[in-house]
Image (tube, rainbow, N blue to C red; front, top):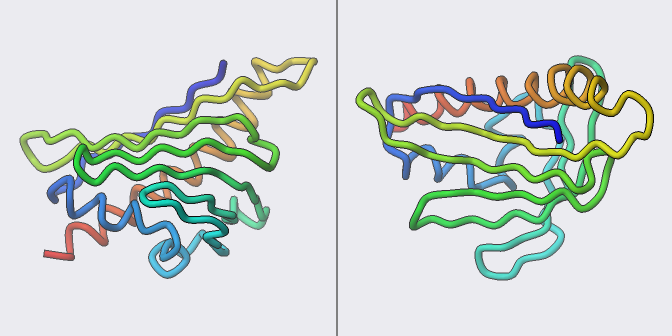
Length: 148
């Protein structure tokens, strides 16, 4: 299992940050490294989204089921299509002294039969996931801290 954890402290309330993070259909508007997000199914706080982002000049795409919990707040994704199929992603919002610690954790059982551990950690985790997650959190910080 490859776990990639990316975290940042944002000087804003969990609810403010959550309002930007949960609105994935607006991510291309908020996040310049996102190419598109298409909501293909809705069912209350659950939806299926087709997503695409840039990792440098490399386009990456996936489809995930997203479940939003505005009360907690919490966001969970389960990837159902793409090279990360089966990956679980969790957005956690923890109040801290200077605001909120936002953590995105990606968990993937990489099924490639050869060198799965190395490929999962170095290629998928560090090169792709961590890069996109860091850009996402940096932009969420700017959006949330200037929203109030």
